[in-house]
Image (cartoon, rainbow, N blue to C red; front, side, top):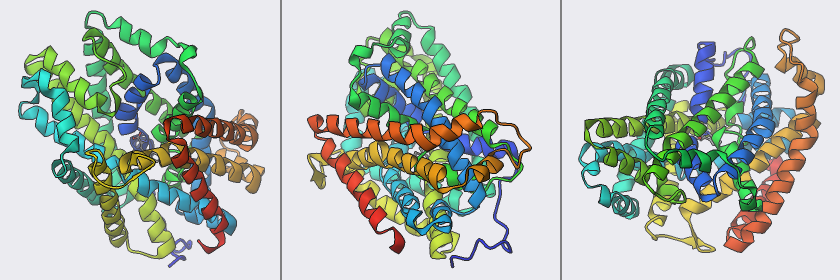
Length: 477
Ligand code: TRP
């Protein structure tokens, strides 16, 4: 029943201002910050990647987030419905967002499952044999059965939280668990920095060497910014749709962006100095967190090492959970608003589909299952979303706001009908209308071109094709 958003039925809203900021920050802060950011920075040469990433966060991330919050709150419906109610031709942007949500949830719970598994592995003696930690990770993720069970458990936790609805489930989880994670990370970073030789890690992370930069690195940095800030697929739009009219959108955006970026940098500071102190490789890849962190704590030794490692993986699991529930929520709110499903049915059916995708992802890491251009399911889902759907989605959201919506309506929404002053409104508007769409187009184009050297270009091109087809079909969606 597409009419479920008539004014007669009050939409669930966030219980408090802090609750919303925490929930939005909870969505942003996740595996993207603690798992993806460090290994991508490590593989992409360190400082220069970090510098470019920060530029994208400040100039594109902030503006896109504000745009998503504004569109979402103005429409007070799920992302796809927000586009649809303004102009049917734009429905596809919301639908691409739902597809992105499904695809990200096709690999995110796999890594979330690893994280939960590591709570148990650490507590059952993983740290006792430091030399075996690397092999143990490789063996674990390529095992056909074990990771699937953990993934299933992880998805189940998501189902429980999202079934309970917005202020009941997500908000409570965010409020309790986010500060806990922050404290753990600071503790770990302080410990890492106190090690002899740690300064080389800081140098790696913060001293840019731009000779290492090519178009793939720039695209990776842009993708990282979108992924980490939960942008480009209507996720923040959906969260914004539950936001009360009196909240300050600009301030909220600034707080969420700052927290997310702070945690990513903090995760880098927690990992790289320690790695350098122990003479480990920064380009260890997706296993970085799961190999280096336990190894680090193992070498630290004793009860302190064990406790810190445990707290770390509890924190990582919690951060992952508050992010993946937001991804699930995008799909669920679409099914509720557009397909008239009950929340419970929507949650269960979409998570069964996600579980199936995750089975392919997980098995692909052991070399099992179909491949495309020599790339397995896990990497395909990651490539399509992180490199293409999110950035192009963000570009389309900006074009929609800049060219399809009214400038004065946007100004009213962002300033709460003139109650809040936002002196940079003109700058934001022009960034969103002109600069950001052009910048994303250029970065995506050159990045895809460079991707053909490593065999990833074809898959990214398929992603662009899928968006094109969705755009052509838009009136039918
Ligand atoms: N930002 C989250 C992380 O860093 C992942 C995430 C949640 C996300 N919602 C999203 C990514 C929406 C892209 C779009 O782990």
